[in-house]
Image 1 (cartoon, rainbow, N blue to C red):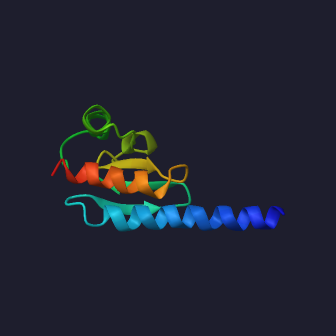
Image 2: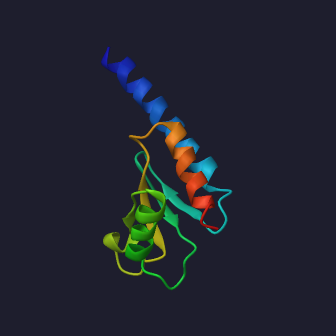
Image 3: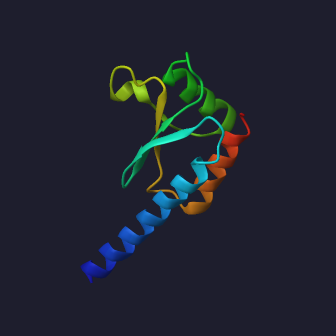
Length: 103
């Protein structure tokens, strides 16, 4: 029983990670730097702006909640962390569509 649950959970997380990878790739200026089971670390296209500023803009203009890269270390202002493991595929795709609207 636990094995079935684990396998189904693993498949779903992999499906969501694949959705994140495939939908962020064509968004101009955005680059997936790394991805794990729950989070993606993405380079944003706004050179010279702090990641906190970009995260705030995404929240206010697009309704997307991200964490600034600067929260995770020095020299990471060009990055944002996006959580995707607890989100269905459709909202992941919608988030990428919203990002495209900024470019």
